[in-house]
Image (cartoon, rainbow, N blue to C red):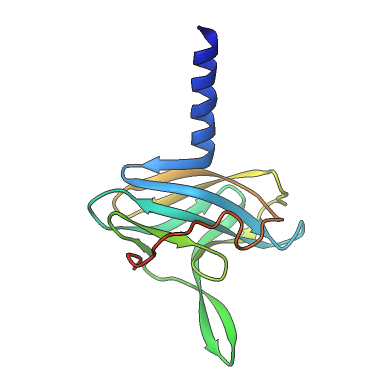
Length: 160
C-alpha cells in the first residue's frame, strides 16, 4: 500500500519539475544558460502553451538571480548581423496555441546576474501573464545544452 503512494508522489514531483501551470497556461521544457561561470547575463528558453479559448500575453518576468529580466528577441540589423532587442508589449500566446522561446529568437534575458550559475542549479522565475497572472517556474541551468536539444516538433502556424 505504501508503494502506490510513493509512486504517485514521485510522478507528481516529476511533473512539477517538468512543467508549471497557471489557469490555461503551461510552461514546458524550460532551461537557462549563460556563456560561462563569470557571465553577467543569461537567457532562458521554453515552450509556453495556452490550453484556453482566449489569447494571453507574457508581459514581464523577474528572477532570484538577476537585477532584471527582459523579454528579448533577435532582429536582423542588416548585413547578416542579428541583434537582441527588448520586446515592448510582451509575447502573444494564442488561444489553443503555443509560443516558443528559443535560442536565436524570443527569450527571457537575465540582466545583471547577482550570482554565478552552473549546470544543475535551479533558478526561480516569476512570469507574469496578462490574463493568467503570475506563474512561478523552477528553471534548471544547463550550460551544455545544444540549440536543438529537446526541441518540440509542431506546427507553429498559430503563433502571433
